[in-house]
Image 1: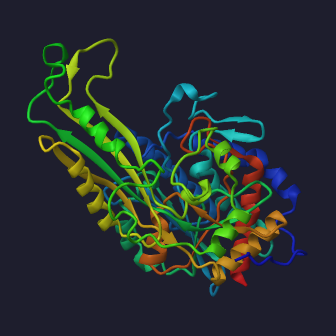
Image 2: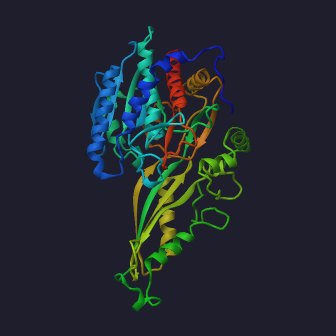
Image 3: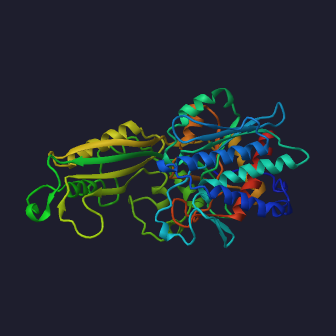
Length: 465
């Protein structure tokens, strides 16, 4: 299915000179936001999270959100506020997040991750692309529209999450608090990449995420490897052996019944994906040159989008400090990141994975499984009027119609909005595949900030029609 282009004669909302005049201030303000080390996974960052939320609240107030406030539901704070448009105009909710991933390994950064650096036409810093820069494009679009004679064409609410990078556990409770204020006609989530700077795209499917922590314990304690080496059970060895048998030689997942509810994607859709999606060398380049691998019979783009995955995100046990310690560990732990496609049931997958691991481990070891995060997979309707308004907006801003992409990532807010609240959602990303989100030297190109501002403003105008 190809996206429908908008009118090629229709210009972007703002003249290039308008953005050029504001560029220095916009970059300075975005740098202030990136400077906050708002790492939601680190409990010690609680004061920083509050300070960043307060900064965003004040920013919304300056835009005209008289009700802007910081929300709490037992976790990291979120920010909410509404800038009013005409009385009878549609209402659009824009979702973004201000929390970021940890910056390790810090030594791999060319400049400190929380001291924003401008070079090669991009702003470098943790969170610059994921998601502060993309969120900022919407904030500036609203600001510039308000400065026009015609004003803001719709009412715009911002919900800015502080827990997206840890699965948004407080989101359901926060949405319940806001229930009387969430009757929106559309929701925009900008936390996704486009194909390339000259090839805009709209994400229409997201994989879900089931994140499990495994811990195995033996009956004894850590013992001397010289006195007992070769004579007693090693928990790290046993867990490593079990983890090594989670995949077949062809790259497919070896857990029985894991694929039971994975839908087949039609040949027509796979042909469309080949036509518009990234090629093998593009995926490898965006992964920093890593060797491609995985389930045979599918391209790298297909493996990362229409097929589920099971990755070992971490393995720990025994002694990993400086120098030597001769020890046989009695405990070991690992973390599994399981990405699921639309149609898969998270509860069922958790059960079959746990059952399979229990069979692979020696009966002398006790297995404990703790679920750290769950996000449901999502498939959005490409033909919905809200989606087609986004198509026209991208066409006006980029001069070419967008394609529809599948993305392997997971965003809890999308399922909460579309399934939980019944709000039509469109994923409007402005990041580029090589922005290095979650990696050292993350950055956001200033050209994409400007394109994002134009696209966001055009979408709000299209919604008003």
